[in-house]
Length: 340
Image (cartoon, rainbow, N blue to C red):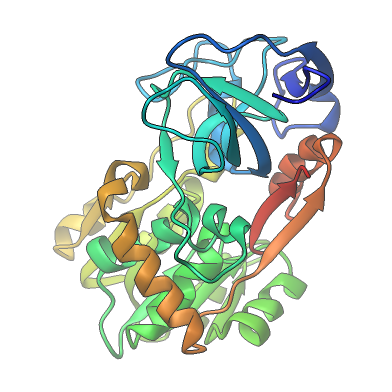
């Protein structure tokens, strides 16, 4: 137990109106209660910033995954920490846990939350287990390996290609022999996709003629689309898919800041005429396969086929800024805040 018994937490100060702003959040201090039987105290070392958690900041947004976040309550997210004290038979002091808890220095849980023990046999920085070896890297792995299944010579398009998942997904598509085309915001980020991640081509989402720019980058059409954006961009892509195309639905960034549901693509009949598939998936439901994914991802890194990019900030006071960076396009790769 920390000597001060004081916790620092990032709470939801108000519900974001559109894209989140730093002053939608506040950092507070609160007393840390004693553990009860069956509980674990986790000292959080890193906070993962993931755009999908914006969804649960709206009133009435609760579902079977998370309740809507309450004003004044700690913001929920993914963390990686060390067991500092345990009164739970399944966890011991010193273990590292990846968990869906809150943006805070210390968390107390009865282990009914999403908890994954981080194995210590991997020779890599601990924070990689929130990024390339965590849910983001695994989303790219499962989405490409299980759902999209790119083949040699095919064209794979990746949306949000400079983000946490997209930065890995495009590289995996190339490992499988496909031609990788990334979609990102801004010319600088598009060039980084090519120079740093090995993308074969990149398309600026802000281009005046996005359909034309995409067609120029994909002259043979689109066989695979890894979608983390949804919305109007999905409609543009559907118009250019090939027969037998596979679309993996990973996220919907375009909808997270919208107060009303975005209109669905008006061209879904493209799936019918091209006998294409569009499949959603949730990585955290595949946690029994995490060892398989970690081994393969780390093997690719060691072979030089896969590079890891992170947008790292430090200190709990930086967590709101890091989260807002996601929606302002200031990140490249996985966004993490080191709390220690």
